[in-house]
Amino acid sequence: MSQINISNLTFAYEGSYDNIFENVSFQIDTDWKLGFTGRNGRGKTTFLNLLLSKYEYSGHISAGVNFQYFPYPIADKTLNTIAIIEEICPLYQDWQLMRELSLLEVAEDVLTRPYQTLSNGEQTKVLLAALFLSENSFLLIDEPTNHLDIAGRNIVGKYLNSKSGYILVSHDRAFLDNCVDHILSINKANIEVQRGNFSSWYANKQLQDNFELAENEKLQRDIKRLKQAAKQSKEWADKVEATKIGSAGKSGKAVEKSIDRRAYIGEKSRRMQQRRKNLERRQQDNIDEKSKLLKNIDYASDLKITQLPYHKSHYLSVSNLSIAYDKVVCSNINFSVEQGDRIVIQGKNGSGKSSIIKLICGEDIPYTGEFTIGKGIQISYVSQDTSYLKGNLTDYALQHNIDQSLFKAILRKLDFSRIQFEKDMADFSGGQKKKTLIARSLCEKSHLLVWDEPLNFIDVLSRVQIEELLLEHKPTILFVEHDSVFCNKIATKKVSL
Image 1: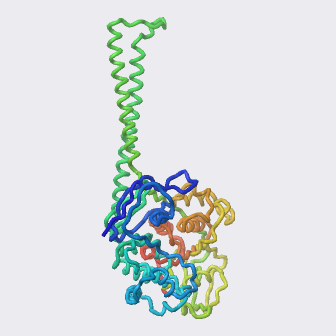
Image 2: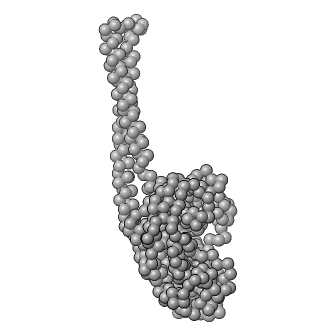
Image 3: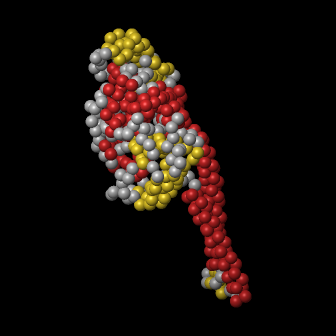
């Protein structure tokens, strides 16, 4: 076991006025299984790139290990999978590779297939196996679950739990609980490391947030009382000060005080002014104390949604549905969507989930069986793909005929900074792009939400906000998602392929 030491780390992107990290210091043991969490755009991937020495920074990072990054960049995906593995780890032993593939439940025949023919789940597993073959390496695993179905996540979670020596970026709560023993969190004001899994960290965060909110409320009351006392003290002090020289007589002219009386009044005035200063100092101390609180509270503001009413309770149905391209991807599918349903479509990668979604949304998908949808049903669709997003948010709102103010207000509640509104969407993080699609969908006038893996790349706190939104407003929604916690909380029905 060795340590990775980060000392006084400060970093900002060129041309930016704001530091991503400022004087950050902490230590990591290289045998930890470290979960890495934080709001989208806080700098998780940036920190991994700093460990990989991709950017210049001030401060110090020292480590007695090599860093390996997942996903490994594949230059030529037409190569056979075994050639890709040899590029990543040239000195591997055959028996070691077979052991890793077996643990990940990957068939041996993938090695002789072109890498590009593997499913997303198979590619994820192969790269993880190859990276864990490297000796004296600390792995930086960046969001491996985005292309894994629920079964695949369970397999990879079990696999990672048997390993050690990695930082794992993931927003899947159940997945993190299955395979980490420490949490590294990027907060609003600092970076902290805690022992335990995600659930224990989140419970501690809620306790700390509640304590700071209670202390803040008490301080606000204290500040209000001190302001009133300071105001009253100032009025008294001013009145006493005014009597030090003299007071107006019956004629309206000032009457001079006696020398003896003037000394007494001067001392009284001094005491009143001192009391006023003491109150103001206490008030400022309270304000300073308040500034130390609430530093890491991520406000998860409530979101709202209003769906269009539909004149029938029945929205759509599929009966004995089969979809085939070169081969059959799914068959004998039966379900219906009624008003108020929240239906999740689940199944392994490649089982036809997205094809069913696209068929419902009106794409020309070859199928047999029956598919009917209510006349005039308006659908708001969130796709898996975000790569096409570019341009500014204002033009995007105009293009989709949605309320710009509401659109940006929702993004603010999903932790977009105001400066983000000025950026090109092409420069957004993966999570920020997905939030853009969801915010647009919430603004659109529709009868039915159809969301295809909406939570990919989206941070945990935003997932909680979206969960609370769907549970409170109960929209009619059909969705595909592999976050088991989200599905169990939201879905009223499940369709298994």
